[in-house]
Image (cartoon, rainbow, N blue to C red):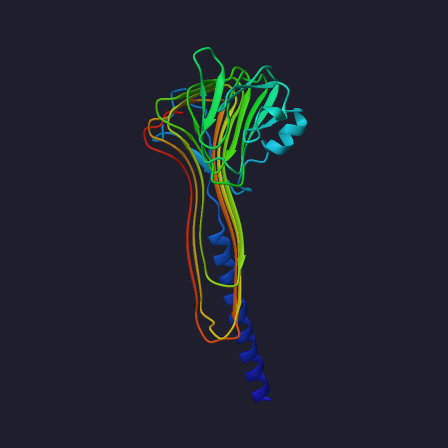
Length: 313
């Protein structure tokens, strides 16, 4: 009888220990996937700086959910122009020269597709008020500011969008690319919303070691004068799988990921609301079997949503 009782006590302690280990593992998984979210919270009238601005940490799903360009194209019946396909794609386009097109009509909603070829592009405004988007691997375009929506959509390449001095009237500006930046010395004006999405995603599968790097970035360092929302949203997503089998069983996996949304110290922002968001989702599977060796996994992850000291909001 005593032996049976001891065995039951031992079994319960073992079960408790096993459950505790499982909970600890679950806790690690939750902490590794936590996303920092900041929301501005203030009713004070004096200008806000990074020294006096209060923030709430939000426990909600990261990332903007309301300004998806694919959905906006449908909702606004937007005209889409691929900047790698030339003027023949639309009757309202004409060739100014071999490197420049012009859109002859002012539109309500316009989305410019950077496609997979674009690397660095710049959106600026000419002296006569027309907008110009230019880049090394696209055909530049001159066009009037749309009245409702201007969208820039990056392709599968590594795209960086630089914003210069812009006055968009009442139009919303939505930019999706791996990197979006308004540099110091430039001013964005609109009575609508401005949404900058630094999105980067990568899917990779293989049977040997992998070394991957993925970055999503949004930075505002200049001046913003808008009547609606300012949203800075950096998101990174990675899905990597290694399935290795053979006599040599060693596998090395290296990952560096960075999702950064930041307002710089010299930024000067006037907006109805400001949201700074950053999130990272890394889904990794490494499976090595059939041999003798080691599995080495080295992951560096940076997820940051920040307002630098000195910024005025």
